[in-house]
Image (cartoon, rainbow, N blue to C red):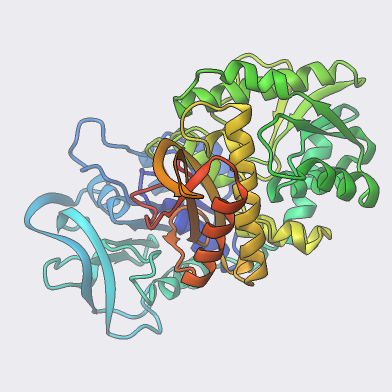
Length: 509
């Protein structure tokens, strides 16, 4: 495995993806990870990520300097390189010529990290500070016009530094550079597969759970469905899946879940009608974070109450993923910026009777889909678009009411139906409707109307960390708009969201 130290880079999850794409497992940890834990992980290599700080800032993130004495290969990227250089006696300074965006990298030594790479290749820079003096036994291996020391190495210690970002698509040969570090330097083997993940995690679940029972909140989405099959494989009848009708679901969701999991997959499944328990505390609430926290706490209370009726339940399972953790708070205690809380991780109460178990928390969405395929999950579930844990509540901007839920549920159903008919569904990462807290004037049947506005959102993405708005055909958008306005009472205007992530998020709340 490869250990990635998170110094707060917006790209640190992309580093992890690039490593895993080459079938090598990696794990992200904060810079304050203790040395004994690093040793217990037994990494073949360590990658120090980039970050927005300057090495000379008072509170800039730093790692235990003893990692440089562990005889483990280390690759520093951007801030990670500067931290390594500074820690080992080199010099970092702020320069007058900062470098952001594309630059032409001129390679001076092709023996290790740059093996098999062109002598000149584009790279993506994003830094203000630069290295001005090297520690002992380091040498320069690449430069750009503005950055003389763009890459360094200490072959004896197997320390390497890249001032640019090899993990982004703008560095076209970056994947090869990372591959050289993984296989030529660290000697990793391509053993990270979904089969190996299943073996490892099922054993971990068995060891942790023992003879106790688990309840899982099953929403019918990809994440909770895959978690259900994985837990069922590990502990079988010790698992009880609980489907909560919280009144915030898509059209026909309950019957679809019941049909698949209870009748076809033979998984122990309980249904709970908790619509009032969710909708009442949401009355008058417009702040999205308060919505998420209310929904998260209510979920836990519902599960804890249900657990009292199941003998020996000590664990609550959730389908939390890596991006959930990153966007909810600083990753594993690391310095990444908080974006928003997810109900899986940010909405949990501080005091819980049940212990939390999250078998998918180190996986990206595409890996979860691969895992689902390996576990035999039907393709119509595997290819389903992501659906937020708080459901339609965070797609209704403003107060959540039964009437507004009905409007959005119908509009969303029409949107998804038409996208599936047009064969665009599987090409998209996500498509959904949003209901705004605004009304606009319209004319219907020669009469003035003053009714709701529905937003259509459709994006393309690989992992939800970044996304671009989808260029859907105008003919498709026309059909969707006409159907929503004609069939959903209370809507007289439909608009299309053409914002990318960043700066926007995929969901509106």
